[in-house]
Image (tube, rainbow, N blue to C red; front, side, top):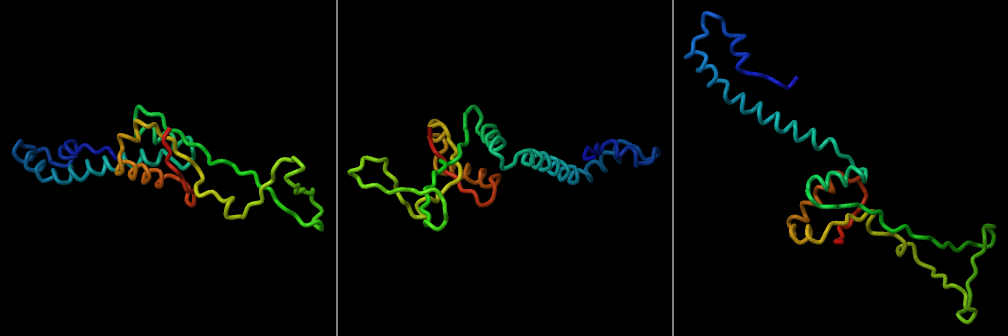
Length: 162
């Protein structure tokens, strides 16, 4: 659908009696800007088709980063899952959590605030130290922009060097 050969179109639409070398060359010169715009369109279309191949899923995000930064091994790891310890009222009828004195030699239980349990990032992008050194500040910003373009909205990430 997007493959147009302008030379064939010129020969198809130009009457046989007018198909002379000079007139054909003149029409090709007139069509040159249209050919240039058409080639730019095809290049942009190919770039968009490549961008559409990737999604925010971890496997596709890893593949896209590894393709973009060739010859490297970049992988994505989920942020650590936190084990929540909840304190309930007796009236709720849930299993009891006991708090012991230090002298009783029982495992420690730490009670935390809700703000302490919230993580500031949802996944970690692990990159090799050689790639990190070669990127510099502008390269890291570009990597962040690429990840932001594909990641799921509302998810935060951290770039970590391995």
